[in-house]
Length: 187
Image (cartoon, rainbow, N blue to C red):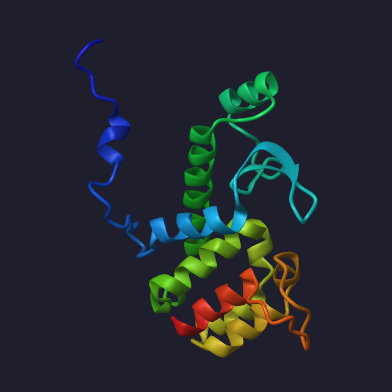
């Protein structure tokens, strides 16, 4: 049908503005950080937690691939960049929704956009079910206790899985979880 414009074109941001959803989450910032931190693999690999993963950290075991991507992967042994970007968008959307639901107001409203981004990235990494286990951290958010949140982040399995130094040691490099803790602390 000539002259039809795909609906998704209306959803694209104009220029280079930062897309922010209604909850005040800087989506472009999260995307950029995840692209850098997760890296891109168009072929399936095992993540540090031992899960089958593809694209920018998409956990195939937790969230099976859409049929057309699964079919393409089975036929070609890898996915396309466009498919990886689609999965990233989908995963970020799910992580934002889950973080908002789990933290809820007034805790969510207290969080700055940077702190929200940290929470979304944690949900991206460990899933909503894993994030629900952070009872102490969520209580610290409700109490508006920045150092308490950082302490709970640092003493978690999430911290170790992302390559954080064990408590009491330091190799002089700022690992990914330390960067996120610093980002949360600075607001």
